[in-house]
Image 1 (spheres, rainbow, N blue to C red):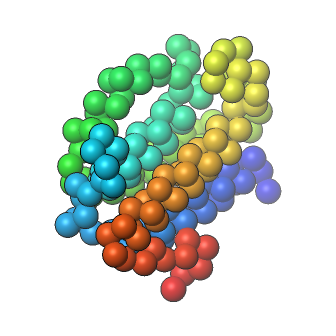
Image 2: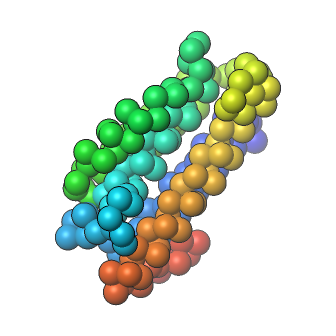
Length: 159
């Protein structure tokens, strides 16, 4: 198996687990947040989508990873529809696969420049961080699902 195949496989699993564990949520849940100031359901999904883009765009960008975190949060907070957030998530996933396919194994093995975001690590490690990040937000969304009186599906089995 090539590195590119492994990255696509790892990413496909992370995407599938995220989608499965959030499928009990629907458009009526879009603006739910457990407390004021926390991301809503839609914003949690939008943030996951945005972060996929952030990782795959930043890993090869000459200027490195985007660091305008306040502006990025504003982009996410503008999302009020779960359907729109899910569309963003799907676009981000398609883009991530295109980035994987658009770079050689040698490019993925090349080390990131020194810096605050995984400096010196091989580029392919961004998919470990991306997997952890989506897991974190699907976990938060599982809590939101329970607070809404629903049962979140088990992410690791298709039921």
